[in-house]
Image (tube, rainbow, N blue to C red; front, side, top):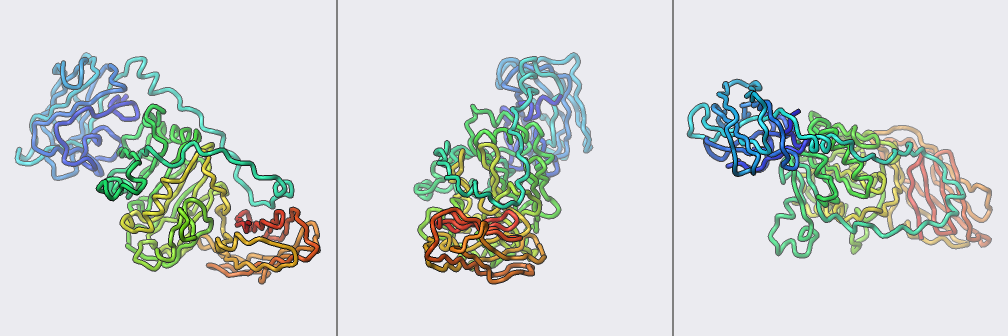
Length: 543
């Protein structure tokens, strides 16, 4: 096995130099990224040294070292290399184990060590380079072939903790009276009031705006969450299940612009990630910018069906952004801690047209925000799902809006969102179309002998077209309460405005009521709650 691979505990102990800590960092010598995307370039010419350690610095037996010398950059290709082994430390006790003159050819080239060499650390010495020594030297990839000792091998190959059983897809259905009558249970306080220690899987700091906010001068951070959050960025190709061990202390993982998520993250990591989320942690996914139609992420590792539409980087604006569910991630009420000024966002310069929207889903995904991107189709751009005790958040907003104050509020709310439990109610499950209304109207209190009128918007999702039939009547029959919609059918293409009217007579008493229709279900709880459900998508009018 390649015992230098990060998923098996391999890591870079030291390197004499690297031209940057992003695409040209030494970690790319051993990670899963493609050499043409990320490789190592030193900051100077040869000689250079790289020391590689193994799982928890335990011993291994090395039989060969494989090099790919192509740097895929202007850095000079390495020519003469040596391998030195040490059982002592990363800085001492090294004994020469082998040497090789690399051909200037884009193929893997092997330095065989016979007999195998015992080592806890291996030092690669780049002694010379092709095309002269007037420019920095580099390498594409290094694989160290060998065997870990029994303790290390058992640890890295141990089965991951089991994730919770995935519940069946939530079908659109009418709430039962029993469910309406049941008093809501009081949720326990969240184990995490917000994110605190965040692991970001991204190739560059610029791919996740909060990393840039965290790097601001202390005076700027003093009154913000970014003065207290602890971030660690790891190249996606270096992800390993060990990062999710409780000893690391991470409570949040962010996948930022990991377009090749299916291939660059080892299966052992994604399996461990889902188990980790289910145990009461938060996963945030950002993918709009680098992940375009040519680099569409494959999210098949997620527990529920999920795929996105990716228009790519065009700097396109959009004038449409709508709350479908208002919650602690975002609300429309000025002065609320979660307030986001969507009107201001759409009127100012923005790149909402580049947003990625959700195209594949099931009813366990819950919608918060919809936009219309440059493909001229309404779609969910902010969604979430509960998994075990944990929370999965998807943010499809273009990451190049990092300097946009509205976007900054949104990503800040994502990190501030409590979890385990998160308290998010999933009031709008993803479906072909969805109902929404103004948040202020959801606080109306119904009384006897009154008439209440609620403007309602019916939104198409991902270009859904069809006739939606809309009628409402109480069940069981209750002459004291009536409900009606001003349209009995809507030929939905994009969006349609409706009006829901609820009338109570003087004989109305406080009791649970359900108002049913072919495609609309209106639930009243004790004259204080109306829930409208269309094929499983609901909003609440609540006291």
